[in-house]
Length: 67
Figure 1 (cartoon, rainbow, N blue to C red):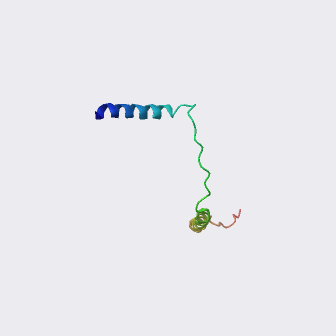
Figure 2: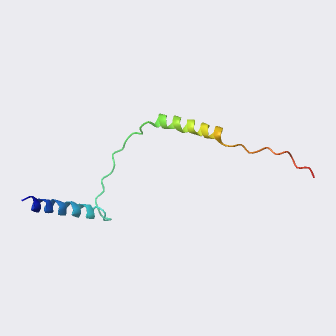
Figure 3: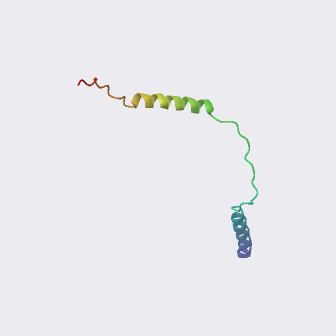
C-alpha cells in the first residue's frame, strides 16, 4: 500500500521540479523587504575601511635624484 502512494508522490514532485526550470514557468515576485541592519552595515564598513587604511603600506618617500 505504501509503495504506489510513494510512487505517485515522487512522480508528482519530480514533474513539478523539472517543469519549474522551463522559461515559461510561472514566477512569483519576492515580497518587498525593508533593509535590515543598514546602519550597522555602514558602521562596520566604515570601521573596516579605516582599519585597512591604517594597515596599508605607505609609499616610500625617495629623495630626489641628482644628476
